[in-house]
Image (cartoon, rainbow, N blue to C red):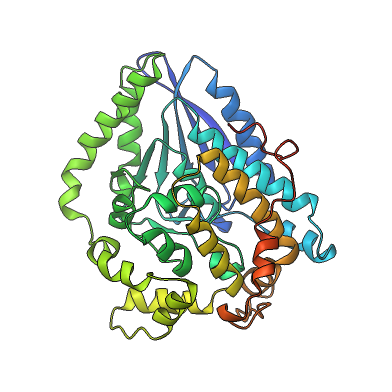
Length: 372
């Protein structure tokens, strides 16, 4: 039986080791299961305090994806069997996923993420936690939760709200697929290499003068990646997000009904924008409202506060939102014909959104109460 996640260590000339995590379900585009999340949490916690480990690397098996998201089918089946109830499956999965993401953000030692191929949803949650986030010419990065009745979670409340202008709102509503240049522009990626340079990178990392000083180790890795990236920067593709920032800000201006009207009446020859428009307008009206509520959080909340807010909203979505119908249409029956609870954005009852954004726990009993 193949392991769904593989842990290895790479020796270096300095005597320190590099811990390597490989997501290993290539046929499922390395989508995260609860078992994978739990195994990574255990191993990474161990490596965090192991003085012989100088740095860790996260990568995905195969050439198609780093990680296409979370495997949410178990949550779907539990939620269908227990309508209008918060299930142990939903609570367990999202709690452990956010704990893993938070651990990466707070890791201390350098965390290099090889963001080659598809990086979506839960995969982006892992990548955002890395200190050194590599994108390649094959990177396709998106938060497509609007298509399954969710919203961009896994820390999206933190990183989307810190992007230029209204870009974060645009990415949440449209599930737009970012290329490497887009990812660098919004700072989800911070280094650009070619997809065939991974072995070269590992060889170079094995020769660095690693020590037990994590600050120096961060600098060593940054210097190496900057040097390796430099020759490729001239060949970066165009970033639509950067090029059309002004138009995106205008398109996303105003309240939810303004934005819905602007997207509905948009007439454009730009194919990427047509795709974004189509996805947004087909998305869950509840998701639209949640994405707007998320954007209202602004940049005031800490990362810990963002994850706490998200956990409440995510488990609520599974019990009384559009999540089950979205997953059914996209992943279970695959008919791509979701019947959302509300026909359009204007029809959504505000009391439903208030319910969805009200945490089921008080501060003391919150599953993420130890996040500070």
